[in-house]
Image 1 (cartoon, rainbow, N blue to C red):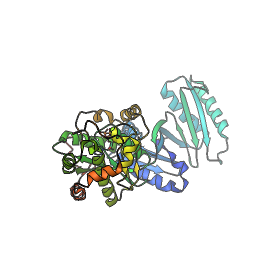
Image 2: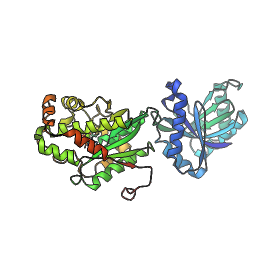
Image 3: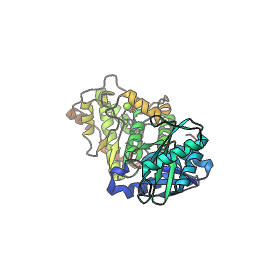
Image 4: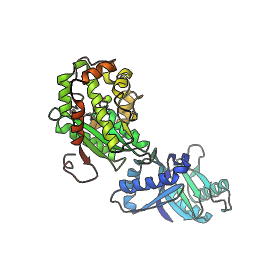
Amino acid sequence: MERLILIKYGELTTKKDNRKLFINVLEKNIVKLLGEIDFKIIKDRVRMFIMSDDKNVDIIINKLARIFGIHSIAMCYKVNNNIDDINDVVVNIIQDKKQKSFKIETKRSNKKFAIPSMEVSRIIGAYVLKKTDYIVDVHCPDLLVKVEIRENDTYVYIDEVKGSGGYPVGVQGSGLLMLSGGIDSPVAGYLALKRGINVECLYFESPPHTSVEAKNKVLKLAQILNNYSGNIKVHVVPFTKIQETIYKEVPSTYMITILRRMMYRIASIYANEKKFKVIINGESIGQVASQTLSSMVVINDVTTTPIIRPVACMDKLEIIDLAKKIDTYETSILPFEDCCTIFVPRHPVINPVLEVAQTYEKVFNYEELIREAINNIEVVNLNKKNNYDELL
Ligand code: ATP
Ligand code: MG
C-alpha cells in the first residue's frame, strides 16, 4: 500500500482541447509554489498524484488548497486491483479515524475489473461491518470512503479537501493589475488569477506625498497574492510630477477624473509595451465619484486596451468578505495614504463631460510626463531576494 496526495483537476474537464496545456501549466505552478519541499509528481489525463515524506503532507495540502486549477485534494492509498487488498486498506484507514458510521462509494473506470461498482461497495461494506464496530449510514455518514478502480491500481481515499477551483495561473496569458493599497484591487487580482491570468502589478506612487510605508503595504499585498501565483512582480510608477502638475493646472472638480485618465494612459502604454493582454483593476460601480458609470466612460476613453474589473458588480461587503478569505484584508486596512487619497477634492465631479476633461488636460504636456514616468518604472520581483525583503 502506498500513500499519495491525490489532486482532482478543476474546470479542465470542460476544456478538452486545452487539457494538455492546462495540466502542464498546473504542474509547473505546483512545482513553483511548493518551493523547496522534496516531492515527486505523477500526472495523467484525469488526476495528479504527489508523493512526499509523511512529515510534509500537511504543508503540501495547505499550499495546494491555494493553487488554482485544482478541484479537490485528498490523502489517498494506492493498492492492487484486488478485492482482498482493497478490503484491507479500507478497514485500516477507517479504523484509524475513530468515527461511527461510513459509506462506500465506488467508481470503476477499468471495465476489465470483473465486479461492478455497486457490488464492490457492497462487498467492502460487508467486510468493514464484520471487522469493525462501524455502522453503515448512506445518507449522512461520518466517513465517505471513495474507491476508484482504475487501469493499473485502485485508489482509496476519505477527507477530500476542496481546492480553489478556477484555471491554472498562466493559461490565459498575462494581465497588468492596477494595485493600490486598498481593499478592492487585491481582491480583483485574486479573481483574475483564478481565471488563469498571469497577473503582474502596477503601482503608482507619489513620494514624498505618499510614504514608504504605503509602498511597502502594496508590496506586502502583492506578496500575499503571490501565494496564489508564484510569478508576481510589482512595477512601480513614479507619479509625483504628474500628480503635482494636475493639482496645479486642473480645476479641483476634475482632478480625480484627469488623474485617473493619466493612470489609464500609463497602464495602457506600458501593458502594450510589455505585452500584457489586459488591464485589471479594482473599480466597483458607484463606489466613489470616479466610479459612477459616467465617470468610467470618460476615464476609459483614453485607452482601447481591454479592462477587466472583477469586482465591478460586487457590494463592498462582499469584497471585504473575499479579502478576509484570501488574507489581504488585514494589510489593506493599515492606515497609509495612497496617491488617490491625498489632495482629494471636496466636490469631485460625478458626471464628467469628456470634452471638458480633454480641454483641461490640454494645458500641460502630459505626453512628455507620461513618457518620463514610464521610463523610470522600477520593477520589484517578489520571487528574487531584494532590498524589500526585510521590510515585508
Ligand atoms: P481599492 O479600490 O483597491 O480598495 P482604493 O479604494 O484606494 O483602493 P480607488 O480609489 O477605489 O482605490 O481606485 C480604484 C482602482 O484604481 C483601484 O482598485 C486600483 O485598481 C486603481 N488604483 C487606485 N490607486 C492606485 C494606485 N496608487 N496604484 C495603482 N492602482 C491604483
Ligand atoms: Mg476602491
